[in-house]
Image 1 (cartoon, rainbow, N blue to C red):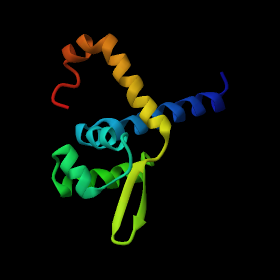
Image 2 (image 1 turned 90 degrees about the horizontal axis):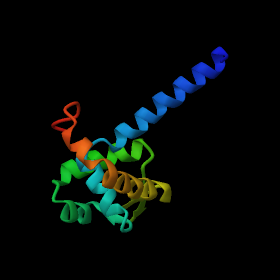
Image 3 (image 1 turned 180 degrees about the vertical axis):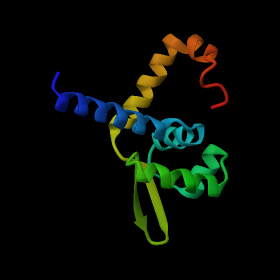
Image 4 (image 1 turned 180 degrees about the horizontal axis):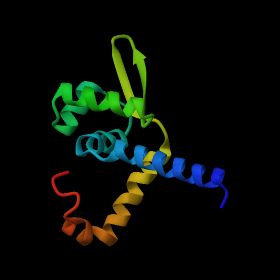
Length: 114
């Protein structure tokens, strides 16, 4: 394999890891789960997730920066939505994968406390 191919493969793996870190937080996953039902404003997300407003706003900022959600301003309200239907598909696929590997994930000592 050429050095270019190795560098490209390494970059792809690092980019995958960076993307998946965006999903690697229970609060962000809760927000994405609720947004999979449709666009919402912050106070709706607070009510639906049970998270505090500052917590929701902080995680939305992260999700926006990572490109996982988009926003539209309507007057003084900002409505958030999942930026691509493929994100909803990915979350559905993760749930299907958990049906197969949940026992191993639950037993995993490496990621306890996440």
